[in-house]
Length: 295
Length: 198
Image (cartoon, rainbow over all chains, first blue to last red; front, side, top):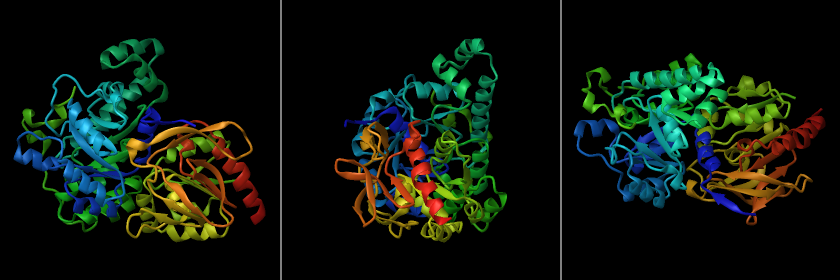
Protein backbone atom coordinates (compact mmCIF):
# COMPACT_ATOMS: atom_id res chain seq x y z
CA UNK A 1 0.00 0.00 0.00
CA UNK A 2 1.75 3.17 -1.14
CA UNK A 3 0.59 6.65 -0.28
CA UNK A 4 1.11 9.41 -2.83
CA UNK A 5 0.80 13.04 -1.77
CA UNK A 6 0.18 16.16 -3.85
CA UNK A 7 -1.43 14.40 -6.83
CA UNK A 8 -3.59 16.35 -9.25
CA UNK A 9 -6.64 14.57 -7.88
CA UNK A 10 -5.81 15.47 -4.30
CA UNK A 11 -5.16 19.12 -5.24
CA UNK A 12 -8.23 19.57 -7.43
CA UNK A 13 -10.30 17.44 -5.06
CA UNK A 14 -9.60 19.83 -2.19
CA UNK A 15 -11.27 22.60 -4.22
CA UNK A 16 -14.25 20.33 -4.94
CA UNK A 17 -14.83 20.13 -1.18
CA UNK A 18 -15.11 23.93 -0.98
CA UNK A 19 -17.92 24.14 -3.53
CA UNK A 20 -21.08 25.94 -2.54
CA UNK A 21 -19.13 27.75 0.15
CA UNK A 22 -17.75 31.16 1.03
CA UNK A 23 -14.02 31.81 1.59
CA UNK A 24 -13.40 34.93 3.66
CA UNK A 25 -10.40 37.28 3.91
CA UNK A 26 -9.20 37.68 7.51
CA UNK A 27 -6.28 39.62 8.97
CA UNK A 28 -6.12 38.11 12.47
CA UNK A 29 -7.24 35.19 14.64
CA UNK A 30 -10.35 37.00 15.95
CA UNK A 31 -11.64 37.62 12.45
CA UNK A 32 -10.83 34.02 11.51
CA UNK A 33 -12.99 32.75 14.38
CA UNK A 34 -15.84 35.05 13.37
CA UNK A 35 -15.59 33.68 9.82
CA UNK A 36 -15.55 30.05 11.01
CA UNK A 37 -18.51 30.66 13.32
CA UNK A 38 -20.41 32.24 10.43
CA UNK A 39 -19.97 29.10 8.34
CA UNK A 40 -17.03 29.98 6.08
CA UNK A 41 -15.57 26.91 4.30
CA UNK A 42 -12.07 28.40 4.52
CA UNK A 43 -10.30 31.63 5.41
CA UNK A 44 -7.70 33.59 3.44
CA UNK A 45 -5.03 34.90 5.80
CA UNK A 46 -3.57 38.22 4.69
CA UNK A 47 -1.97 41.28 6.24
CA UNK A 48 -4.35 43.86 4.82
CA UNK A 49 -7.66 43.35 3.07
CA UNK A 50 -7.68 44.62 -0.54
CA UNK A 51 -9.57 47.81 0.39
CA UNK A 52 -6.73 48.78 2.75
CA UNK A 53 -4.03 47.80 0.27
CA UNK A 54 -5.79 50.09 -2.18
CA UNK A 55 -6.12 52.95 0.33
CA UNK A 56 -2.62 52.72 1.80
CA UNK A 57 -0.70 51.91 -1.36
CA UNK A 58 2.89 50.67 -1.29
CA UNK A 59 4.12 47.18 -2.12
CA UNK A 60 1.83 44.41 -0.86
CA UNK A 61 3.56 41.13 0.03
CA UNK A 62 3.05 37.70 1.60
CA UNK A 63 1.87 37.85 5.23
CA UNK A 64 4.04 37.39 8.30
CA UNK A 65 4.38 33.64 9.08
CA UNK A 66 3.57 34.36 12.77
CA UNK A 67 0.24 35.85 11.80
CA UNK A 68 -0.58 32.92 9.51
CA UNK A 69 0.27 30.40 12.24
CA UNK A 70 -1.92 32.22 14.76
CA UNK A 71 -4.83 31.94 12.35
CA UNK A 72 -4.07 28.25 11.72
CA UNK A 73 -4.12 27.67 15.47
CA UNK A 74 -7.40 29.56 15.92
CA UNK A 75 -9.62 27.68 13.46
CA UNK A 76 -10.28 24.11 12.31
CA UNK A 77 -11.28 25.00 8.74
CA UNK A 78 -8.74 25.28 5.88
CA UNK A 79 -6.43 28.31 5.89
CA UNK A 80 -5.29 29.81 2.59
CA UNK A 81 -2.66 32.50 2.08
CA UNK A 82 -1.52 34.74 -0.77
CA UNK A 83 1.81 34.82 -2.58
CA UNK A 84 2.83 37.46 -5.12
CA UNK A 85 2.51 36.52 -8.79
CA UNK A 86 5.74 34.77 -9.80
CA UNK A 87 7.22 34.81 -6.27
CA UNK A 88 7.96 31.11 -5.93
CA UNK A 89 9.97 31.59 -2.74
CA UNK A 90 6.98 33.14 -0.96
CA UNK A 91 5.03 30.10 -2.15
CA UNK A 92 7.70 27.74 -0.77
CA UNK A 93 7.51 29.56 2.57
CA UNK A 94 3.72 29.21 2.64
CA UNK A 95 3.98 25.51 1.79
CA UNK A 96 6.45 25.02 4.64
CA UNK A 97 3.93 26.63 7.00
CA UNK A 98 1.37 24.04 5.93
CA UNK A 99 -1.24 26.42 4.55
CA UNK A 100 -3.97 24.47 2.75
CA UNK A 101 -4.10 26.48 -0.49
CA UNK A 102 -1.94 29.23 -1.99
CA UNK A 103 -3.55 32.11 -3.87
CA UNK A 104 -1.09 33.45 -6.45
CA UNK A 105 -2.78 36.78 -6.31
CA UNK A 106 -2.94 39.99 -8.29
CA UNK A 107 -4.06 41.72 -5.09
CA UNK A 108 -0.41 41.64 -3.99
CA UNK A 109 2.23 43.49 -5.98
CA UNK A 110 3.56 41.15 -8.71
CA UNK A 111 7.14 39.88 -8.30
CA UNK A 112 7.46 38.82 -11.94
CA UNK A 113 5.80 40.65 -14.81
CA UNK A 114 6.34 37.82 -17.30
CA UNK A 115 6.08 34.44 -15.56
CA UNK A 116 3.75 32.96 -13.02
CA UNK A 117 4.89 30.35 -10.49
CA UNK A 118 5.46 26.81 -11.82
CA UNK A 119 2.75 25.34 -9.64
CA UNK A 120 3.43 21.70 -10.63
CA UNK A 121 6.53 21.93 -8.42
CA UNK A 122 4.45 22.11 -5.24
CA UNK A 123 2.60 19.61 -3.04
CA UNK A 124 0.20 22.38 -2.00
CA UNK A 125 -2.52 23.35 -4.47
CA UNK A 126 -2.83 26.83 -5.99
CA UNK A 127 -5.78 29.03 -6.87
CA UNK A 128 -5.21 31.74 -9.49
CA UNK A 129 -7.29 34.63 -10.80
CA UNK A 130 -8.55 34.91 -14.37
CA UNK A 131 -10.49 37.49 -16.33
CA UNK A 132 -11.16 35.23 -19.35
CA UNK A 133 -10.96 31.61 -20.48
CA UNK A 134 -7.51 31.85 -22.08
CA UNK A 135 -6.02 33.23 -18.86
CA UNK A 136 -7.75 30.51 -16.80
CA UNK A 137 -6.37 27.76 -19.07
CA UNK A 138 -2.85 29.22 -19.00
CA UNK A 139 -2.96 29.12 -15.19
CA UNK A 140 -4.27 25.52 -15.23
CA UNK A 141 -1.46 24.62 -17.65
CA UNK A 142 0.99 25.97 -15.05
CA UNK A 143 -0.58 23.72 -12.42
CA UNK A 144 -3.38 25.79 -10.83
CA UNK A 145 -5.92 23.42 -9.20
CA UNK A 146 -8.64 26.04 -8.81
CA UNK A 147 -9.57 29.23 -10.67
CA UNK A 148 -11.35 32.31 -9.43
CA UNK A 149 -12.63 35.12 -11.58
CA UNK A 150 -10.71 38.24 -10.60
CA UNK A 151 -13.28 40.98 -10.31
CA UNK A 152 -11.82 44.21 -8.96
CA UNK A 153 -10.72 43.51 -5.39
CA UNK A 154 -11.28 46.01 -2.60
CA UNK A 155 -13.98 48.02 -4.35
CA UNK A 156 -17.30 46.52 -3.25
CA UNK A 157 -18.30 46.91 -6.91
CA UNK A 158 -19.38 43.59 -8.36
CA UNK A 159 -19.43 44.71 -11.99
CA UNK A 160 -15.98 43.39 -12.91
CA UNK A 161 -16.61 40.00 -11.32
CA UNK A 162 -19.83 39.88 -13.34
CA UNK A 163 -17.96 40.79 -16.52
CA UNK A 164 -15.31 38.10 -15.92
CA UNK A 165 -17.87 35.38 -15.13
CA UNK A 166 -19.85 36.27 -18.26
CA UNK A 167 -16.68 36.27 -20.32
CA UNK A 168 -15.43 32.88 -19.04
CA UNK A 169 -18.90 31.33 -19.33
CA UNK A 170 -19.45 32.78 -22.79
CA UNK A 171 -16.12 31.54 -24.10
CA UNK A 172 -16.80 28.04 -22.74
CA UNK A 173 -20.22 28.00 -24.45
CA UNK A 174 -18.62 29.16 -27.69
CA UNK A 175 -16.07 26.30 -27.58
CA UNK A 176 -18.84 23.77 -26.92
CA UNK A 177 -20.63 24.84 -30.09
CA UNK A 178 -17.59 24.51 -32.35
CA UNK A 179 -16.69 21.77 -34.82
CA UNK A 180 -13.69 19.77 -33.67
CA UNK A 181 -11.55 21.00 -36.57
CA UNK A 182 -12.12 24.59 -35.44
CA UNK A 183 -10.58 24.04 -32.00
CA UNK A 184 -7.00 24.44 -33.25
CA UNK A 185 -7.62 28.04 -34.22
CA UNK A 186 -9.67 28.57 -31.05
CA UNK A 187 -6.65 27.44 -29.00
CA UNK A 188 -4.45 29.87 -30.92
CA UNK A 189 -6.88 32.73 -30.31
CA UNK A 190 -7.26 31.89 -26.62
CA UNK A 191 -3.46 31.54 -26.31
CA UNK A 192 -4.07 28.33 -24.43
CA UNK A 193 -2.91 24.72 -24.87
CA UNK A 194 -4.93 22.75 -27.44
CA UNK A 195 -5.47 19.75 -25.11
CA UNK A 196 -7.11 21.94 -22.46
CA UNK A 197 -9.20 23.76 -25.06
CA UNK A 198 -10.41 20.40 -26.40
CA UNK A 199 -11.26 19.19 -22.90
CA UNK A 200 -13.31 22.31 -22.17
CA UNK A 201 -15.10 22.00 -25.53
CA UNK A 202 -16.05 18.39 -24.72
CA UNK A 203 -17.09 18.81 -21.07
CA UNK A 204 -18.56 22.32 -21.28
CA UNK A 205 -16.74 23.37 -18.13
CA UNK A 206 -13.31 24.16 -16.75
CA UNK A 207 -11.30 21.09 -15.65
CA UNK A 208 -11.03 22.65 -12.16
CA UNK A 209 -13.41 24.35 -9.75
CA UNK A 210 -14.31 27.96 -10.65
CA UNK A 211 -14.94 30.39 -7.80
CA UNK A 212 -15.55 34.09 -8.12
CA UNK A 213 -13.93 37.02 -6.33
CA UNK A 214 -13.57 40.76 -6.35
CA UNK A 215 -16.14 43.30 -5.22
CA UNK A 216 -18.68 40.95 -3.62
CA UNK A 217 -20.21 42.83 -0.68
CA UNK A 218 -23.79 41.61 -0.11
CA UNK A 219 -25.74 38.33 0.08
CA UNK A 220 -27.38 39.25 -3.22
CA UNK A 221 -23.94 39.75 -4.83
CA UNK A 222 -22.94 36.25 -3.68
CA UNK A 223 -26.19 34.74 -5.02
CA UNK A 224 -25.73 36.59 -8.32
CA UNK A 225 -22.29 35.05 -8.78
CA UNK A 226 -23.64 31.55 -8.04
CA UNK A 227 -26.39 32.15 -10.59
CA UNK A 228 -23.67 33.05 -13.12
CA UNK A 229 -22.18 29.59 -12.67
CA UNK A 230 -19.61 30.12 -9.91
CA UNK A 231 -18.93 27.04 -7.75
CA UNK A 232 -18.41 29.28 -4.71
CA UNK A 233 -17.43 32.75 -3.59
CA UNK A 234 -14.43 34.59 -2.16
CA UNK A 235 -15.34 37.64 -0.09
CA UNK A 236 -12.46 39.95 0.69
CA UNK A 237 -13.02 43.40 2.11
CA UNK A 238 -16.82 43.06 1.93
CA UNK A 239 -17.23 41.43 5.33
CA UNK A 240 -14.76 43.00 7.72
CA UNK A 241 -15.13 46.47 6.17
CA UNK A 242 -18.87 46.41 6.87
CA UNK A 243 -20.90 47.51 9.88
CA UNK A 244 -21.67 44.06 11.30
CA UNK A 245 -19.15 41.47 10.04
CA UNK A 246 -20.49 38.39 11.91
CA UNK A 247 -24.03 38.88 10.68
CA UNK A 248 -23.02 39.80 7.13
CA UNK A 249 -20.69 36.80 6.93
CA UNK A 250 -23.46 34.40 8.01
CA UNK A 251 -25.90 36.07 5.61
CA UNK A 252 -23.52 35.60 2.65
CA UNK A 253 -23.10 31.90 3.55
CA UNK A 254 -26.89 31.40 3.54
CA UNK A 255 -27.33 33.25 0.25
CA UNK A 256 -24.57 31.20 -1.40
CA UNK A 257 -26.27 27.89 -0.51
CA UNK A 258 -29.78 29.11 -1.41
CA UNK A 259 -28.72 31.35 -4.32
CA UNK A 260 -31.74 30.29 -6.38
CA UNK A 261 -34.28 30.95 -3.61
CA UNK A 262 -34.99 34.72 -3.58
CA UNK A 263 -36.91 34.46 -0.32
CA UNK A 264 -33.89 33.09 1.54
CA UNK A 265 -31.67 35.74 -0.06
CA UNK A 266 -34.21 38.40 0.98
CA UNK A 267 -34.26 37.17 4.58
CA UNK A 268 -30.46 37.01 4.63
CA UNK A 269 -30.30 40.61 3.39
CA UNK A 270 -32.43 42.09 6.20
CA UNK A 271 -30.97 44.42 8.82
CA UNK A 272 -27.31 43.88 8.02
CA UNK A 273 -26.31 47.46 8.75
CA UNK A 274 -23.92 49.28 6.51
CA UNK A 275 -22.20 47.52 3.64
CA UNK A 276 -18.62 48.53 2.83
CA UNK A 277 -18.62 51.99 1.32
CA UNK A 278 -17.16 50.96 -2.01
CA UNK A 279 -15.54 52.51 -5.02
CA UNK A 280 -16.96 52.45 -8.53
CA UNK A 281 -14.54 50.55 -10.74
CA UNK A 282 -15.20 53.07 -13.51
CA UNK A 283 -13.74 55.82 -11.29
CA UNK A 284 -10.49 53.93 -10.77
CA UNK A 285 -7.66 55.14 -13.01
CA UNK A 286 -6.31 52.23 -15.08
CA UNK A 287 -2.94 51.91 -13.28
CA UNK A 288 -4.83 51.21 -10.03
CA UNK A 289 -6.86 48.31 -11.41
CA UNK A 290 -5.69 45.04 -9.89
CA UNK A 291 -7.53 42.80 -12.37
CA UNK A 292 -5.14 43.89 -15.13
CA UNK A 293 -2.25 42.24 -13.28
CA UNK A 294 -1.48 38.73 -14.51
CA UNK A 295 -1.34 37.69 -18.14
CA UNK B 1 -35.58 3.73 -4.14
CA UNK B 2 -35.34 7.51 -3.96
CA UNK B 3 -31.87 8.66 -2.88
CA UNK B 4 -31.04 12.23 -1.91
CA UNK B 5 -27.71 14.03 -1.58
CA UNK B 6 -27.54 16.66 1.15
CA UNK B 7 -26.82 19.74 -0.94
CA UNK B 8 -25.97 22.49 1.55
CA UNK B 9 -22.27 22.62 0.64
CA UNK B 10 -19.55 20.34 -0.71
CA UNK B 11 -18.96 17.97 -3.62
CA UNK B 12 -22.66 17.30 -4.21
CA UNK B 13 -22.29 17.05 -8.00
CA UNK B 14 -19.74 14.21 -7.78
CA UNK B 15 -22.02 12.15 -5.54
CA UNK B 16 -24.97 12.78 -7.86
CA UNK B 17 -22.89 11.51 -10.81
CA UNK B 18 -21.73 8.42 -8.89
CA UNK B 19 -25.33 7.57 -7.95
CA UNK B 20 -26.52 8.07 -11.53
CA UNK B 21 -23.77 5.65 -12.63
CA UNK B 22 -25.30 3.12 -10.20
CA UNK B 23 -28.68 3.43 -11.93
CA UNK B 24 -30.21 5.74 -9.32
CA UNK B 25 -32.07 8.97 -10.14
CA UNK B 26 -30.87 11.09 -7.20
CA UNK B 27 -32.28 14.38 -5.92
CA UNK B 28 -30.75 17.26 -3.98
CA UNK B 29 -31.88 17.81 -0.41
CA UNK B 30 -31.72 21.32 1.07
CA UNK B 31 -35.11 21.57 2.80
CA UNK B 32 -37.10 19.43 5.27
CA UNK B 33 -39.79 18.89 2.60
CA UNK B 34 -37.15 17.46 0.25
CA UNK B 35 -35.80 15.20 3.00
CA UNK B 36 -39.27 13.78 3.56
CA UNK B 37 -39.35 12.62 -0.07
CA UNK B 38 -36.24 10.42 0.03
CA UNK B 39 -35.70 6.84 1.24
CA UNK B 40 -31.93 7.14 1.67
CA UNK B 41 -29.42 9.98 1.99
CA UNK B 42 -25.80 10.66 1.03
CA UNK B 43 -23.79 13.20 3.04
CA UNK B 44 -21.11 14.62 0.71
CA UNK B 45 -17.55 15.70 1.30
CA UNK B 46 -17.17 19.35 2.21
CA UNK B 47 -16.60 21.42 5.32
CA UNK B 48 -18.32 19.66 8.22
CA UNK B 49 -18.63 22.84 10.32
CA UNK B 50 -20.37 24.68 7.48
CA UNK B 51 -22.73 21.83 6.62
CA UNK B 52 -23.72 21.29 10.29
CA UNK B 53 -24.37 24.97 10.76
CA UNK B 54 -26.50 25.32 7.62
CA UNK B 55 -28.41 22.15 8.54
CA UNK B 56 -29.29 23.67 11.89
CA UNK B 57 -30.24 27.10 10.52
CA UNK B 58 -32.45 25.64 7.80
CA UNK B 59 -34.22 23.17 10.09
CA UNK B 60 -32.64 19.93 8.85
CA UNK B 61 -30.63 18.90 11.92
CA UNK B 62 -33.47 17.38 13.96
CA UNK B 63 -35.40 15.88 11.01
CA UNK B 64 -32.24 14.11 9.78
CA UNK B 65 -31.52 12.81 13.30
CA UNK B 66 -35.08 11.49 13.54
CA UNK B 67 -34.87 9.80 10.15
CA UNK B 68 -31.50 8.21 11.00
CA UNK B 69 -32.83 6.80 14.26
CA UNK B 70 -35.87 5.41 12.48
CA UNK B 71 -33.68 3.49 10.05
CA UNK B 72 -33.05 5.72 6.99
CA UNK B 73 -29.94 4.38 5.20
CA UNK B 74 -27.19 7.02 5.08
CA UNK B 75 -23.74 7.07 3.50
CA UNK B 76 -21.25 9.81 4.42
CA UNK B 77 -17.84 10.50 2.86
CA UNK B 78 -15.21 12.54 4.74
CA UNK B 79 -17.25 15.46 6.16
CA UNK B 80 -20.18 13.06 5.86
CA UNK B 81 -18.41 10.60 8.15
CA UNK B 82 -17.89 13.37 10.70
CA UNK B 83 -21.58 14.31 10.47
CA UNK B 84 -22.62 10.68 11.10
CA UNK B 85 -20.35 10.22 14.12
CA UNK B 86 -21.76 10.21 17.63
CA UNK B 87 -18.66 11.93 18.87
CA UNK B 88 -15.84 13.98 17.28
CA UNK B 89 -12.36 15.07 18.34
CA UNK B 90 -10.54 18.27 17.26
CA UNK B 91 -13.93 19.77 16.56
CA UNK B 92 -14.80 23.44 16.39
CA UNK B 93 -16.21 24.50 19.75
CA UNK B 94 -19.84 23.46 19.95
CA UNK B 95 -19.76 21.66 16.57
CA UNK B 96 -22.83 19.49 16.13
CA UNK B 97 -23.32 16.25 14.19
CA UNK B 98 -26.36 14.26 13.10
CA UNK B 99 -24.90 11.25 14.88
CA UNK B 100 -26.32 7.75 14.84
CA UNK B 101 -23.08 5.93 14.11
CA UNK B 102 -21.41 4.80 17.34
CA UNK B 103 -17.90 5.97 16.49
CA UNK B 104 -15.45 8.64 17.61
CA UNK B 105 -13.90 10.46 14.66
CA UNK B 106 -10.84 12.70 14.72
CA UNK B 107 -11.14 15.61 12.27
CA UNK B 108 -8.21 16.29 9.90
CA UNK B 109 -6.47 13.32 11.56
CA UNK B 110 -4.20 12.64 8.58
CA UNK B 111 -3.06 16.28 8.65
CA UNK B 112 -3.46 19.40 6.58
CA UNK B 113 -3.75 19.60 2.80
CA UNK B 114 0.03 19.16 2.40
CA UNK B 115 -0.48 15.63 3.84
CA UNK B 116 -3.51 14.76 1.70
CA UNK B 117 -2.85 11.57 -0.30
CA UNK B 118 -4.11 8.79 -2.55
CA UNK B 119 -3.68 5.13 -1.75
CA UNK B 120 -4.89 1.77 -3.08
CA UNK B 121 -6.56 -0.04 -0.18
CA UNK B 122 -8.60 -3.17 0.43
CA UNK B 123 -12.31 -2.80 1.09
CA UNK B 124 -14.11 -5.67 2.85
CA UNK B 125 -17.01 -6.18 0.46
CA UNK B 126 -15.88 -9.64 -0.56
CA UNK B 127 -13.77 -8.47 -3.51
CA UNK B 128 -9.99 -8.89 -3.50
CA UNK B 129 -9.53 -5.90 -5.82
CA UNK B 130 -7.94 -2.81 -4.32
CA UNK B 131 -9.87 0.41 -4.30
CA UNK B 132 -8.40 3.85 -5.12
CA UNK B 133 -8.93 5.96 -2.01
CA UNK B 134 -8.48 9.74 -2.01
CA UNK B 135 -7.90 11.32 1.40
CA UNK B 136 -8.26 15.11 1.64
CA UNK B 137 -7.64 16.65 5.07
CA UNK B 138 -9.26 13.40 6.03
CA UNK B 139 -10.58 12.21 9.38
CA UNK B 140 -10.06 8.72 10.81
CA UNK B 141 -12.07 6.64 13.23
CA UNK B 142 -10.51 6.51 16.64
CA UNK B 143 -13.03 4.38 18.55
CA UNK B 144 -15.86 2.12 17.51
CA UNK B 145 -18.81 0.94 19.53
CA UNK B 146 -20.42 -2.51 19.52
CA UNK B 147 -22.06 -3.39 16.23
CA UNK B 148 -19.73 -1.21 14.16
CA UNK B 149 -17.78 -3.14 11.54
CA UNK B 150 -14.50 -1.88 10.07
CA UNK B 151 -14.43 -2.28 6.29
CA UNK B 152 -11.09 -0.62 5.51
CA UNK B 153 -8.08 0.75 7.38
CA UNK B 154 -4.94 2.79 6.71
CA UNK B 155 -1.99 2.33 9.08
CA UNK B 156 -4.32 0.57 11.54
CA UNK B 157 -6.76 3.51 11.55
CA UNK B 158 -10.28 2.60 10.40
CA UNK B 159 -11.26 4.65 7.34
CA UNK B 160 -14.46 2.84 6.31
CA UNK B 161 -17.04 1.62 8.81
CA UNK B 162 -20.57 0.31 8.79
CA UNK B 163 -23.22 -0.21 11.38
CA UNK B 164 -26.48 -1.65 10.12
CA UNK B 165 -28.04 1.05 7.85
CA UNK B 166 -25.17 3.54 8.16
CA UNK B 167 -21.97 3.59 6.08
CA UNK B 168 -19.08 6.05 6.34
CA UNK B 169 -15.71 6.48 4.61
CA UNK B 170 -13.05 9.03 5.42
CA UNK B 171 -12.00 8.97 1.74
CA UNK B 172 -13.78 10.20 -1.39
CA UNK B 173 -14.89 7.44 -3.81
CA UNK B 174 -16.94 10.08 -5.62
CA UNK B 175 -13.73 11.63 -7.00
CA UNK B 176 -12.30 8.53 -8.69
CA UNK B 177 -14.92 7.30 -11.15
CA UNK B 178 -14.89 3.91 -9.35
CA UNK B 179 -18.45 3.47 -8.07
CA UNK B 180 -17.90 0.34 -5.98
CA UNK B 181 -18.59 2.04 -2.65
CA UNK B 182 -21.75 3.74 -3.91
CA UNK B 183 -22.94 0.43 -5.36
CA UNK B 184 -22.15 -1.28 -2.04
CA UNK B 185 -24.20 1.38 -0.25
CA UNK B 186 -27.17 0.91 -2.57
CA UNK B 187 -27.10 -2.89 -2.85
CA UNK B 188 -25.69 -4.07 0.49
CA UNK B 189 -26.69 -1.32 2.91
CA UNK B 190 -29.72 0.62 1.70
CA UNK B 191 -31.78 -2.10 -0.02
CA UNK B 192 -31.63 -4.63 2.87
CA UNK B 193 -32.29 -1.86 5.42
CA UNK B 194 -35.37 -0.63 3.53
CA UNK B 195 -36.62 -4.20 3.12
CA UNK B 196 -36.40 -4.62 6.88
CA UNK B 197 -38.40 -1.44 7.55
CA UNK B 198 -41.15 -2.64 5.22
